[in-house]
Image 1 (tube, rainbow, N blue to C red):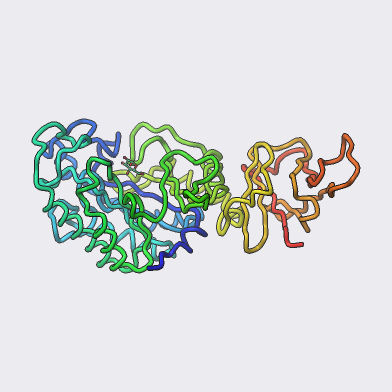
Image 2 (tube, protein in one colour):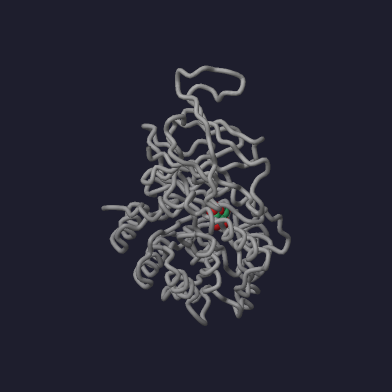
Length: 406
Ligand code: GLC
């Protein structure tokens, strides 16, 4: 069974969307569990959920403009409330199929489609009261088999009723609940219904790793030292869903994040949390626009790129990304150096160098092995870039493109 990694490994950047009735609490996605709400307590959200400003077309345009290549949308989170038209429950938004709206809008913009589906369900009567359940410690025993059938049935619906689904993002398996899902058959079902699909967070059955709010310093490798496929998920302001209080990351921090993922062979799945009415707050919109502005000039240094070959160590405060097909090396400068920067082991390998954003030449000198050493000569084997005194205007995170096509 072939798994379609091509789009995943070249796209590098996706939009995560956490949206549901928990957005009304405007505190945390886990509000029902954290505040130990009963179904009755939580019903105030379910009953008053009114997404009158639902505009997936706008989300999709912002994502595309920011250079994102795929979306992952929460069809059902741990609270069990469905944002899709499941025939297996009434615990869903009844007016329209919100998942369909999202899928249509993002597909229309040419993005790949991922669906987030929570394995736990804090509403289903046959879901056990595990350690994270809102009613934890109360009425623990139950027959989970009807829940398993429901879960498989809903996955079947999602993978049958919406055309091509490229990715299914499961979430919420813990060692104490892993036996509930029947993972062998769940995986089989996914692969039967959607050829090439990628699966995440189904322990032992998934196709890539998903570090959360933490970027592996050197990337991720399997037992034999081969690089793994991976995707880091990150938040804009400290929580997954919309919150009233926010601690925003800056555009420069988010861009560094994207570069740090790409330079280690991973993807960045960047989360947004629309308001309960279905709109994006202005700050989220403007952050996405800032990313789009940078990506307009720099996307060549992200899409189709991975980490640089190990023979090229990164200079201080820099990251490399590398397009192996075109043999272009991108030097991302997290801080602007004093007039020059030395790049180890690149002497004799570069035919041309330029600033990526405006295609303006950067001249360089080289010290090929065996040359004379001296205080003003780059180290053996190094290539020295001569840089302008100050960083380019209006260009956070400048990038130098090096052509290694000699
Ligand atoms: C964590 C959170 C969950 C969220 C997920 C996204 O697992 O518990 O609420 O959806 O991260 O990665």
